[in-house]
Image (tube, rainbow, N blue to C red):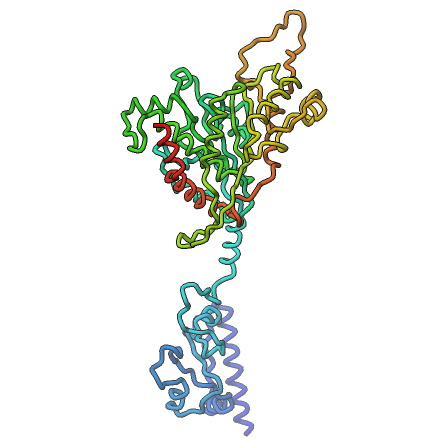
Length: 477
């Protein structure tokens, strides 16, 4: 017994010495082999490991098969929970974490459904980030327009491209304009839309340039539309009763519709159709004139009001038998463009208001109490004491960039006395008054911007097919 212990200790010393020499020499250590009895003892004392079973997911197994049947065929005790290895053991623990999403629901205990969803049904497992991005896109501000788009072309055909610029919201304001050729309709609309008077090149409605004025032609063709960031819809129309439109019709040898006897009647009826259309779909209609007063324009407005169609209900169902209609009348604002110094006096302004009130005394158009210069804020001499009436009449002088007269600076260095504030101050006050006007509902129910677009298309089609227009055209022949 003593000899055996001595030999074992001697062998252990030799092994330790050999390992120390290998470490000093930089050689790898040899694995220490134990005896057969020690290996058997370690194998008996180690705990029993559960068997590793490679099974397919539940939805890929054949009908009637289960992981438990596979484990029972091995002959060992079936564990309480089946372990599925998606990767080999040598890949480390990262393999199990990366394969969690691939574990079927039957193994993880989750109750996710494998049935296909309806196309309109939202997937409950979809990430929340997509929903948040969708909400952000809906709440984002619409893109700003830089130029106008055409709503009605030269052939008086409706264009559907403008609907892409409108939103599904009801807080909007529609402003249209009517006037003769060269009165400054596009310029006034561009200034109200927010353009600066000193930057003519960036006007949203392109005004006449010098070459077009010298050729006595018109700039706007049909009806153009522009939408501001404040959701104000501007409609700029071509001049009414225009000799340039008539000249272009005759010079281009365009075919006159059969219902019109002459080209003059065709131009007049087309102008009446545009005016009646604007009086039906706009909250405010601006009547721009450059001298007071044009009797042909006043007679034209009265005729357009007479031929204006009755405003139907907002029911888009064409098969509806409802006859509920109501007469809608817009707000009319008369703008005296290119006004002289004498026009800003209290006497001249009062006479112009009384003349308009006398002419439209039997009209249903709303032409009082909204836009005026007689509030004492623009000119101290124009107030409620010096002006008796409150017709929507506003005076605009010639823009500073277009003034041709030169001031006499021989005796004084003071600026020229004009009798009114600067053009920028006057146009800003006009914009504030128009934007603050009361918006009467166009129909019996509230309309969104997109619904207004389709409603305007229906009105334009009904105006072109109106029996009143046909009867008036017959009387012109």
